[in-house]
Image (tube, rainbow, N blue to C red; front, side, top):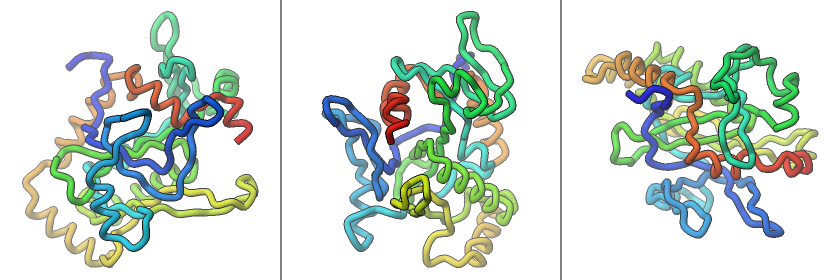
Length: 272
């Protein structure tokens, strides 16, 4: 294994609740009120739709995809959702610093350094350059062919990160560390706040799939746990080792697109 290269869960597509659009000659992020499932390929600056997007949409009423049937690749909540305070160079997309509110890894001219992490609100560099929470959720969508591939949902929204983190921990607890066998759905929810001027703010939740009771889901989990051939603990051990192999999960190749969508110029975010 190449040292310094973070080995992440295999990704075969993206899940988004927004897109990047051109306004006044600039490409800026724009929020949406529905999910979009895409491939990993862009054409003319837009991500190409994954076949599963229209397939799932055809099974629903209306023209918007607001829930997606999914399962998890891991039981461990922290493997399914990796959330950190993250700082990127908004010009180059290069990752500069990641932390958890206690400790952080920062890229310096002398290499990576371990430092204390007070969080974005109390870090001078974080305030200046726009450090904020950044989460990546990997899920498998019902109907995909690749049994070890995942779709990644990225977000810098407090509501999505906090809700998904809680749900993952609760679901794993009630299933007795067998959350990957639960039939789940990614669900888009909305809320209004004073900060949003009472306009709806959309965030992502993770729930037991519609039409399945919690009791039935847990009964099925128990049966699957007794008959499964794959060793969950070994898979998770390999995944942890791979993620810990690098200082940052993002690569220089992915950085520019990530910054464009989630880390626009600081002045733009302040106006928004």
